[in-house]
Image (cartoon, rainbow, N blue to C red):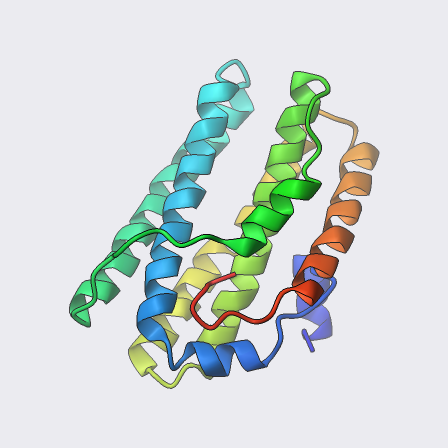
Length: 201
């Protein structure tokens, strides 16, 4: 189970199946490739929000450094691939993100749309941080274990940043009510998906 303190910190309602880290350690190339694309998506998602909401100063100012950080993480994952003689390969379908897309609410005011996207970014960051922690604690490759510890620490606060940013645009009560709904929906998604040793999510 997720340690109680971790559950409180990340907010996740259902822990990752413990089998995932053990099996993932036997599919390092697949995990690293998928992780690289996850970092790409994290950066491009922030860029997309900046492009779509350039009039929201807090969005631009807050997400710009996160773009740089996520891209730096992509470069670090790429370096781990290269060191092991692996290539980036092709992007794989992410069933987890596809399932999340089905529960994202569309429409409403620009502020409502922005908050929805910020909360889904927060969720993906929280789940990624949990997966990084599992890899840090369980992967036998000492270099990669240290690598994932460093990324876990680096990204631990991102999900909180997204939630805090959302509170600038809708009342806190409304934001947190929607956040709890998303967490419950995400738990159902996690429960319905088989652990994929070749995917970060």
